[in-house]
Length: 126
Image (cartoon, rainbow, N blue to C red; front, side):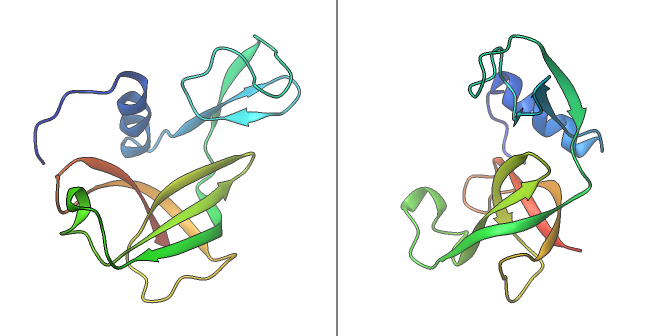
């Protein structure tokens, strides 16, 4: 992996996924968000707590990138998807699947981008 500067709480969150302890933050009203959050954008609550990220999610939407920007040219073609994990939606790269469809069940892990070597959220079919 290419050595890069850590991006604070985002990299802490990626670390938690790599360690098998992924989480999201939730208010008492049940609104879920990815960290970092100090206030719930839905209801304004400041009472947020960590909740375990479900082991699997479902693909809500996806797209295949065949012509990428120079920053990601060695990654192309690749599939980017938004998957619902309980009350949170997460964007990531789909790997290990020839075809991707809405409602496919996926797990979450951390991988690397081919072009930059930077860590990225990766979904794999389950």
